[in-house]
Length: 258
Image: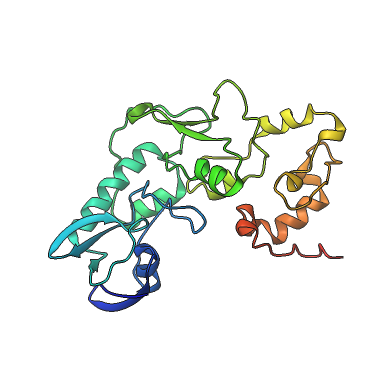
């Protein structure tokens, strides 16, 4: 079904079910976002993609990544009110992740210099986490490992493994969480590698085996992936398709067929 809507004064056609963010960007609107990913169901966590929508004569500010297009709506992506709300969000994000390059770039582009004070104390190594939940959701929705979760509320909200006293058994070390993190707060965990190395050699599955890409393959290299030829071929050609290589739409790694 074709839908007709107006974006910044221009008539635009879209398909039913499309997100307003995708349609607006395709129409040329410059809408920022940190937590939108094409493989993960959006829920507007970062709130940077705010737009103004008028429906049935009523206007409101809403996130565009999780707003499905509707016939006849009018959308404005750069009003004074939209800019005011984005600046407010950016000040909060700066307070949470003061060193994150993506946020610093957005703040500069929007004339935001000072963060809003936050009392949140991030865990060591997660100083730039904005709690968008992308890492936990890609682990659940794309990888299927469910090795990460968001817990708590308010200033107690945090990211952890399902049982905080140990590394999640279901983690396969695929790096999908690091690949989708918009601020660089998540890195591939060396702790998980140490856990894998304690397994008997006959049980040390190659991480590409655990990702469903090389069934049956064992790791001959003690999980030293950086020096592994197999890993380097995937990194060179296929890892940009991660997570997990565009949900296994799979591009053959360069030279892999040789």
